[in-house]
Structures are given as structure tokens and as C-alpha cells.
Length: 187
Image (cartoon, one colour):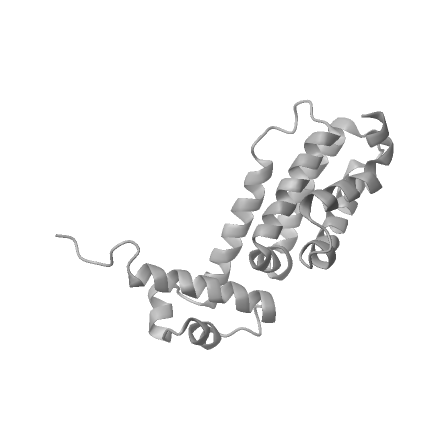
């Protein structure tokens, strides 16, 4: 008979608890201010338990970032933006992204704001938005427009969405009204 921990055993729960507490601490205090000892203390576990699952604080943080990146990019990868898309399609995608942010606020703070590779994630996100913008907007510089939209989305996610001032639908609609008022009138 095989030896080792069973799925959903205390070991699996310990790993999940470490991930949950790490997200909370990284989102609250930042990567550099969070220590492994803080994570294990918050999880009420020991450092040897931490090292059963993670090689280092970096590996834990990178695991969280990979989870965030995968989930975020999956939202856009569900369809080819090089086909006929509309402003309505972009609004739907932005609502999906903002809903994801709302459902995972701490992971969003870690992956979209705190992560070392957040710039790479935002650049990939901007490329996805640009693919939509090029389909229905007649601006001279789709890159500039897309960068501006993602920059606004980044700031408003932090100040309005994660604080509860706006929900995902309201924020997506407001952003698209600001950036594409004329296109919305024609639609």
C-alpha cells in the first residue's frame, strides 16, 4: 500500500491554511514586510511544516502569483480577439476581470499590485485589451488608449472596486463610457 498523506488530510489543510494566511499577510503588509515566521504564526503551524510544502517565501509568493496570472489570463483567452468583436464584448471581458478581482480581493492585491512581475501581467492584459480596441475603435494609437484604460482600471480597482464604492458592472460601464462615449452612442 502506498504511503504518504491522504488527499484532504491535515497536510492538505495545512498547506491551504499557509496559502490563505500568506495571501492575507502579503496583501496587508507587502512581500518584504512579511516573514515566514509571520505566516506560520498566523496559520498556527510550525516552520518545519511550512518547508514541507514550500521551498521558500519566494516559492510561496510565486505560486500565488502564478495562480493569479493563470486565472486572469484565462478570462481573456476564452476567445480570439482577432475576430469581429464589439465594445459590448470588451465590456463583458472587463466585467469578468473586475468580478474576478472582487471575488479574490487579497489575491488581486498580491498579483496585480504587489507582485514583482505585475508589470508583465499588466502588459499582457494591455495587449489583450488592445486586440479588442483595434477591432472597433478608430483611434490613431490603440496602444496609448489601451495603456490608459488599463492604467485607469488599475487605479480604480484599488480605490473604487476593492473599497466597495463600485461593483464590477458599474466600474466597467463607467470606464467604457469615459473612453468610448462616442462608440457607445453609435452602438
